[in-house]
Length: 282
Image (cartoon, rainbow, N blue to C red):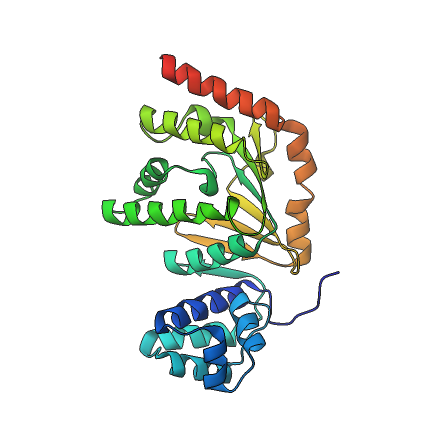
């Protein structure tokens, strides 16, 4: 049973906690040292940083003062603290999106990613990610830096607490990639290796499926052991996170339909390997 919370376990609570942790690490102190400095328990600080408990605006201001966070950054984090109870949050700007999504991935028990037109982010190679980011308008330097961060996030599949990734990949993403042939060949090879991981389940969605409402964009259902699930929607230049129970249930209830029409993991692995070999022999 999920515990009740007002401003905890929301996107803003998690994002605030992630950014407080970054600021603390930048200061070079651990959670116990910070707790001593502000007169709180180590448990309080740890729960703030995981989003399981949200600090009040006053507590947040105290932490920021101790950590030396001032100016615009201070005001931005105080705004997060004030509005932490908002369950549905649109987060414009790459840094905010990344902080939120990275924290979700780190604490998740299972991630389901539906990608009709691209390879899921947690399975992308560096070169594939760089080409995709460039296609969306990023400069070369920004694309290279963001691609490195995206690949770095993939450690959540191979280290730390075990979490499962269920990836639904549109056949169009495999056959008609927005990147050079060699880049896609390497990406298919990476997918074949990923298919061997016990905690990764791949499912190819064949072309022509009449599932338009489910395949009109990229979305992730992210589930946790001790918190309510969320749905993360990717948009051009921004992302939306839904935590409302009914909204999340709509996506969760769609999974049996996707499994019904998608290839099984074994069929998908064979399909991807066949495409890889075709490209290699072309």
